[in-house]
Image (tube, rainbow, N blue to C red; front, side, top):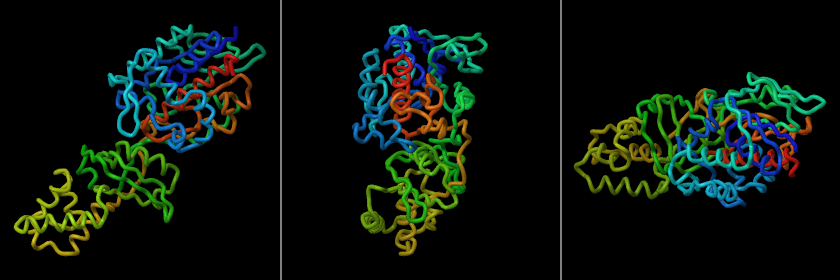
Length: 409
């Protein structure tokens, strides 16, 4: 019986061990933490955004980096197959805004328990508190060493995670193992990370969430990003789903050349919003600018918008000039933001960069440099936007690696 070792007990590693065992291999999963799926517990704000319900022919559009590499993996285990797998293990799922798939219970722990159940049923063994320090290939296969001693394997799957959220075990250690086998690791950068802005007024709005707004970015005449959704103001700048997805679109770019705009009223074009403003002013001839803005914005945003638009709150509406109306219109539809950087890598949801996909067979996840060595999950140089795409990539690549490592390709 072929013996397969899996290093890392996140979603990719668990799925790899399950697939290897189901394919007839003796699978052993080595996890350095005291429990499995530690990073999985914090995904989707603790609710676990398992995958996305986007149609198959559109799914790969959710990946920013190297989407074509995932074609075969997604064909082997797509979103529908993953959902059937998890529901079959006793976790009912639901689809929310943007196709995001969550457990009905809203508990990430339910998904982890389902995967643990599948591990037991498949016959895969798990060893916790078993951090691998070195791994090498000898005449009799692969040898993994750590504080647990040493284990020999016929095939080895590296599913060690990225370099974000090191407290969960994703501390970048897997990249060192990959390099020790001669693999190139592309530059490691944060992806899906909150954005630091130059605008001081963002701090005044700390904690305010805007829903159904559009955030867009351009570099000269080239559109880099435009998406409708939810955004959060913080003490350093912006966060929330829109800002996180934007961060992936502009990562690696010269931020000084990026023009970011926030459309607070995307449901109205310029002409329609202008008509509304004119109508509101006409209906409140004795009112003040404060009342006009409170009819358009959350209350905490009103004084900030008044300052940005050059429209003092106590200005009588009858005295609002044409220039002030135009300034307000521009501020509502094209509010500029300037990114000065990103939060630390440790705060990124996922890591951009990793083992070069040029050195990995996309059908099996096997190394092109070292036969019998496989990669899965965030270790690979693949990342997607928010909405369940990164977890799906982890599960799909883990499934392919486990099946192939067991000799079941």
